[in-house]
Amino acid sequence: MGTQRRSFPTMHEAMGYLHDGIIGNLTFAKAWYTNKRGPIGHGKEVPVPDWLDYDLWQGPAPRKPFIDNLVHYNWHWRWHWGTGEALNNGTHEVDVARWALGVDWPNRVTSNGGRYYYKDDWETPDTQVITWDYPQGKTITWEGRSCNKYPVEGLDRGVLVFGTKGVALLDNANYTIYDADRKVLKSGKGNENVDPTDTVSASGIHLDQLHLKNFIDCIRSGQTPNSPIPEGHKSVAMLHLGNIAWRVGRELNCDTSNGHIQNDDAAAALWQRTYEPGWEPKV
Image 1 (cartoon, rainbow, N blue to C red):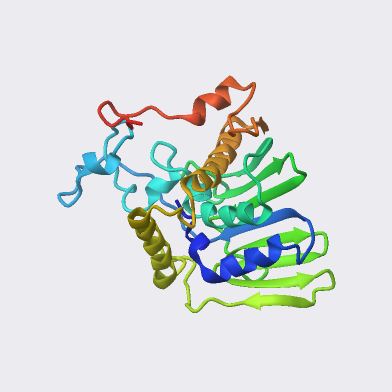
Image 2: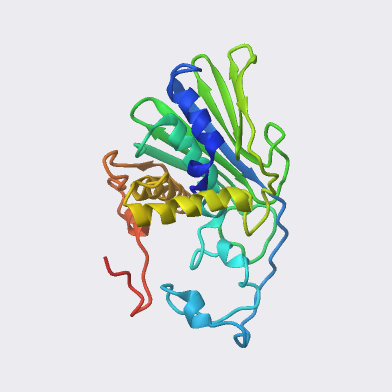
């Protein structure tokens, strides 16, 4: 689900300081991801490659013909299969932002942006800003720029957490906490060099293994994992809400008990998808 930072020791350390009030009341968190992805062109229908089980690959998605610019990665940018950069990379930092602010479901969601850089088969936004407002008087934003790599705070991806007495910069497994005069109060650094554009393990293999180990250990022991399923669900669903707001082109008002969209039938219809017969989830 992209919530592996909940197993990083330095992130637990940083959250301890933040939740203990080192920079006061936490009111706002800004998360971001930047990259420089090129155009994907216009795909054409071709025979399925011998090496690909296309039926298995499509999974629960209703069947469509195979096109030559879909696999391995560009399915992310097509609404039929993917959810854009928001749920490709946004989940990692947005989950950290929500963890820091200690919020659950938003009462208001807005999203702006578009496919600005190229004219091709890419359907999801390559430039997107999502904002979530919470009834506790807190706000989270996520800025995604898939085709412009200019950094924020010198980083391709990260989270800034603003409090009434200072700011925290959370960078993957690193953190620096400043007071209101930009004096460093606390800092910590992870023990692994990472590549934020690595499609296999942007966080670093060792750090991701900590998360996998925790999950397996909890299956064996019955303990609660570092990233409980309900928490992962909230972080993923809030990004889906951001995409829904963008697709319908308006603000969403949500039930703060469960995130459900209120008084907007067209937006609420996007809360779920149509499944290929025989692939419907059984719950």
